[in-house]
Length: 102
Image (cartoon, rainbow, N blue to C red; front, side, top):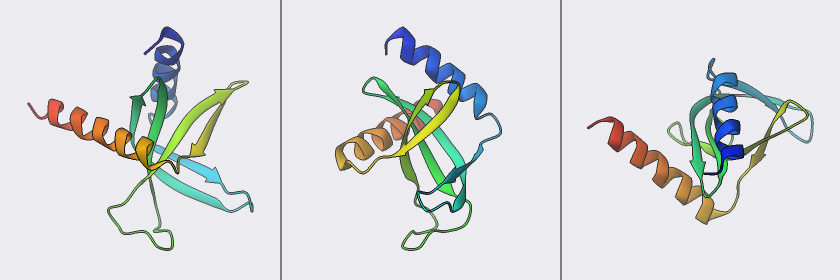
């Protein structure tokens, strides 16, 4: 990970210390999410977020992956729909959990 992304990751981890964020949909609906993890992957930073209240079509143990980015001091979250990125982020998450349990 380059220094710019490393600095961004540290900043994001500091900002998300309360482990909950509210995101606003394109239609203006506010949805609260628990931040399960912040994962660096493939040169970018991703968040694994789980909705506080289940969203239609989601199971209780499911979470969504968002690319985390920031501009002008604001934190941005873009939903990831690319299966390869989602699989890679969850694989990295599983790896980090396995290493932490050792």
